[in-house]
Amino acid sequence: MAIVPISKDDFDRRSPVRTPLVQMLAIEKSWFADSDRNMIGAVIFDKTDKDWNYVVLALHEDGNYRWIDGNSSYPDLALAESQLVERMAAIDETGKVVETLFSDQDDSKPENTSVLFNDINLELKKYFKKNPEHLHQLSPRKFEELIASILKDFGFTVELTQATRDAGRDIIAYLRNAVCSYLTYVECKKYSSEKKVGVGVIREVVGVHNIRRATKSMIVTTSFFTQDAKSEAEMVENQLELKDYDALKGWLANY
Image (cartoon, rainbow, N blue to C red; front, top):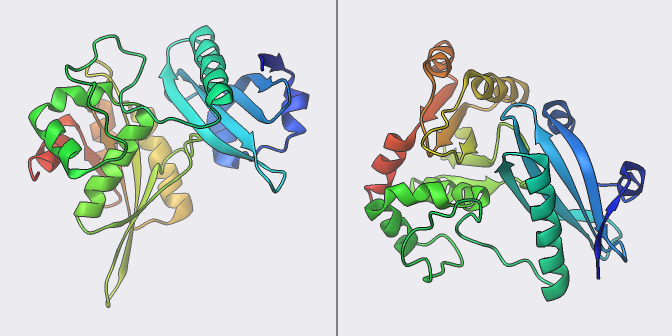
C-alpha cells in the first residue's frame, strides 16, 4: 500500500489527540496516510528546539487513532517527511513496529552494533558505562527509556509519556514511602555534543513544572547547558535539576 500526502482536514477527521501544551510549542506542517487510512502520520516543527519531528498513529479496534511510533531532531522538513514516509511504509509492510536502538540520523555508528538490545537491560547500561560517547547515537526514544531505567534502579517508580512531544515531562517518576510521595518530571534531550541545551528549554520545563505542580523537575541531556541556561536554572534551583553528559556518566559508573 502506498503512503500518500493528505490534507489537514483529512487528518483531523481521524480525531488524533493533541494536548494544548504541545499545540503551543509545535506546528504541524504536513500529513500522510496509507491508502486504506489504517495509519496516519504528521510532521511537526518544534518551536523550542527549532527542529522537525514526526509521529505515526494507527487505527485501533475502538475506532481511535493512537500513537505507535515517532522520531525527532531532524534538521529540515524534507528529511522529516522522507523519514516518516519510509517508516510508515516499513510498518505497513511488516505489520509491526520494530524499535531501533541507535538513531539512523548519524552515519558514525558505534562498532559492534550488530548486537541488538530489545530493551534497556543491565548489559546495555554496562556497555554505555564503558562507551559513554555512544550515547549520542541512541534514538531519542531509546534515550528516554535508558534514563527511565536508570531512575528505576535509583528507586523511582517510572512512567514514560507518549512520544508525541509532551513538552517538559518525557518521564514521570515517583518516590513513595510511608511518610510522603515525591513526584519528579524528567525532560530528556538527546543532543549532539556540539548542541547545548539553551535557556528556552529551561523556561519551557519550569512552565510545565509550575502548571503541573511537581515536587521537582529535571532535564537530562547527552550534551551540556549554555551559560544562560545554567543562570536561569539557578533562579529556580529548588524546583529544577540539570543533569548533563558528565552527570550521566556518573550515573552509569554505578553499573
